Length: 136
Image (cartoon, rainbow, N blue to C red; front, side):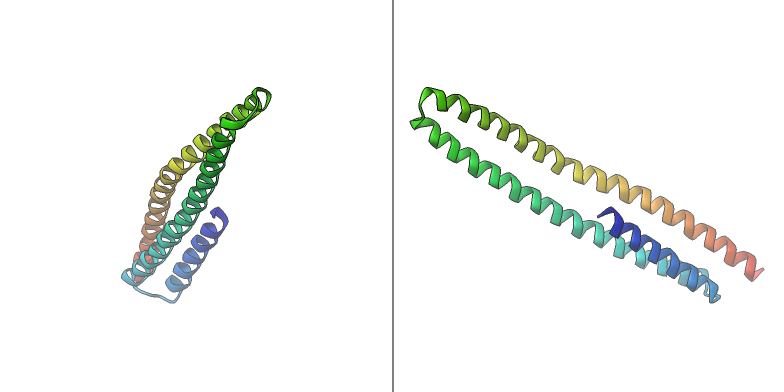
């Protein structure tokens, strides 16, 4: 995910630089940057949703296995119960880890997006200043 977003970011800045080199107006460059920013935002959203769905599927698989183990526990011998309970505890911990990571996805995306917007605005300001110097 990180590499594809960096690729998109690189394309965005290349496009903005190319556009600026063709003596476009500051407004055109800013529009191009904002459009590229929207595209990156969509990519963030899409990839984060895919990751969340994959994690939800994993959590469902864990829950299904837990249900099986709890069912097996009822008819298990005392020796087997100890092993089953150990596996249940491990799966509960794994499910908690999945839930924790799912919560972190939203936080990381929000932080990453804020950083990206700040960097994009800074780049737009630099390009705008360069255009102003060219226009004299």
